[in-house]
Image (cartoon, rainbow, N blue to C red; front, side, top):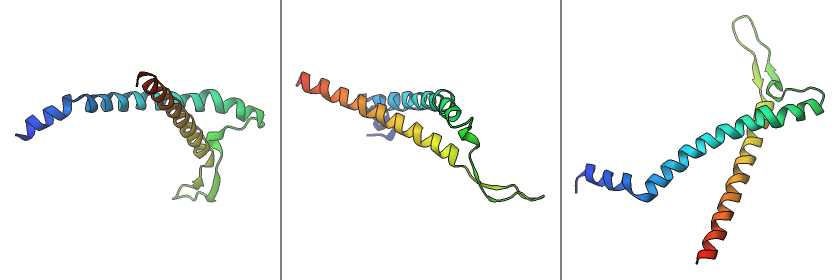
Length: 107
């Protein structure tokens, strides 16, 4: 069997196509969740904490000099990423739980 024929069989299998669709939808969903966190969730939280913009929360490890930029620990952006992850993980958990319950009802 030629490599081209093997690849063609692999590419048109349902599993490979389902995986490709899942990856594309997952990437788009990730962008939506990032926007949700950065543009909807974090601004009110920052407002409640006295007008804090989480993207700008940093600890300067080394101040900037004339020829070198500052070295910053950007923990605000890290917090945004953690919240992104938790929302995506919870969404996937709910989706898998729903699919599993549908499979149980069918079987």
